[in-house]
Length: 408
Image (cartoon, rainbow, N blue to C red; front, side, top):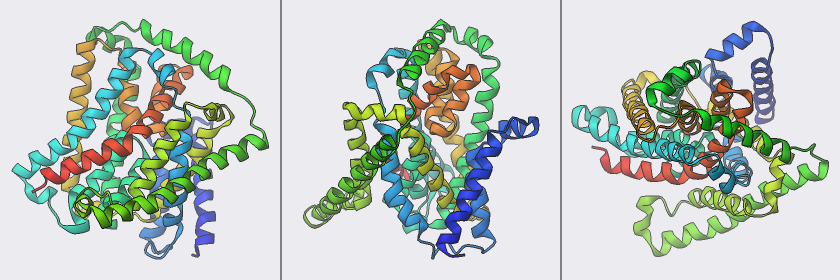
C-alpha cells in the first residue's frame, strides 16, 4: 500500500476501535473493560506489517508523524498544566504521583542491575540491539505516555525488532496492573481501611474538579481550532529551528556529551517543545484547553500509536522472552513502593491508583481508572497524566542513562 492509502486505513482502524469503545452495547462495554482501546490501536496496525501489507522500512508516515505531530502534541498537552490547581488537589495526590514517577525511574535500573547479576544475557546486547535502549523507551511511556516513548525511541535508537518486543512487554505488563487497579476500585473502601487513609479527601477533589471543568468548558470556534493548531505547530517549528542548531553545536564543540545523546537534534526538539508548552501554561494560551487543545493532541497521539504499530512485529517477543521478566520485576518494584508509600502517608487508594496509572497508562487510561471511582473524577486522571507528559521525556532519559550504566 502507498502511504496515502495506509494513512486512510489507519484512520479507519482508529475510528472503528474508538467508536466501538464508546458503544453502549453490553458486549462491547464488557470487551473494552478487559481490552483497552489503546492496545488495539497498537496491535491492529501491526498486523498490516506482520502480514506484509505495509513495508515498515519504506513507509514515511512514522518519520513525519514523529517529527511533526509528536512535538505538537507535547506542546498542546502541557500548555494546560495548572500547577496551582494541581496543588489544590491535595498534597497527597502530588506525593503519590511523584512516588510513581520516581519508582519507575529507579525501578528500571534496579531490574537491569539485578538481572545483570543473575542472567546477564537477558539485559545485554550491543549497538541498536542493546536491551537498555529499548527499556529506555519503556521508561518514557511508563512515566509519561506514547509521545514520550516515541521521543525516547528517536533519542536512543533501539532496533525495530527490539522496540517491537518492548511494546509487547509494555502492553502485557501494564495491562496486568491496570486490571488490578480497576478491580481495586470496586474494593476501595476496604483498601482505604487497610491503608489507614481518610477517603474524604477524594470527595473534596471531586467537588474542585467539577467546578474547574465546568468553568473551562466552551464550544470551540473555527478561530479557536486554528489558534490551537497555530500554537502547536508554531512551537514545533521553533523547537526544530533551535534544536537543529543546538545539537550540531554540541556535537562539534563538546563531543563527550554525545554519550548522553545531547548531540541528537530530536532530543532537543522534544525537550524544547515540552519546555515551550510549560511556559505557555503561565500565559493566556492555557485557556485553549477549554476549546479542546488536549483533544486535538489526543488525535495526534492516537495517530502516533497507530504508526508505531506499523513498525511492530507481534511475533518479536519470541526473540526476547526474557524481557517479560524484566518488565515484571520493574513493575513489582513500582507496585511495592506505591503501596508502602501510600501506607506511610495514609493516602487514599484513589491517589495510589490514579497516580500510578497517570504514569503507567498516561492520558489514555488514567481517566478510566479515575472514572472507575466516579465519572466526575476522570479529569483528575487527565491532569495527573498531563504532568506525566511534562516529566516523562526528562525522567525517562535519566532512567535510560542509568540503565546503560547498569547493563553488563
